[in-house]
Length: 250
Image (cartoon, rainbow, N blue to C red; front, side):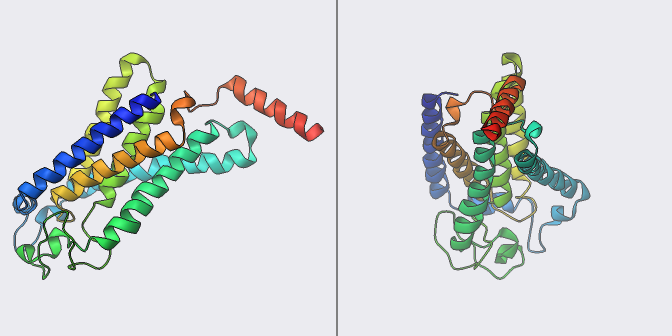
């Protein structure tokens, strides 16, 4: 992916975000209407479904598992030269992005300050908080609020990382199907938060859009378009080790 490709994607994502904002502002009750299809004043019964809870656990594993593996490889490679599988810039980009996007941007800023109560906490579903249309500041929640979905952010962050960093290393014939697979997993996994009563549909939509834009912005900041494959070739690792030995000798 070239620098111009990255800018083009950022432009499309910005347009999609503006369109989504205009849509939800025009139809402020859509969030409530969608959530009412999955719950009532007695709560959200699908949140007790074993199948859906297993699916959610699987999605969380798909998010945290790969990041944990990358972190493990990064730590080991500091001490074991032969364990260096990825280029340093790729490792830093992946780990920094996951820390910044779902960590700081979503959990640290948006969820702490939106004040929007989760669906399961509002009056329509047996709670005592008041429903707030999206993109309006509220005082119905103090911490870990509904806007935006942290899990949807994490899922889309990992999906976009995979699509931008690893998918280009596949054969041309494999790239499009694998991209589509990652996006479908991200969409389905993120939507699970709605029938659980944990988030409104707009929380999921904006989590996906904000996170995708943030990942692509960091992709440009880290200059990932210049490194090609994220993997260190065997020859590159051999050259690196030879250089390291030479440096120690000097």
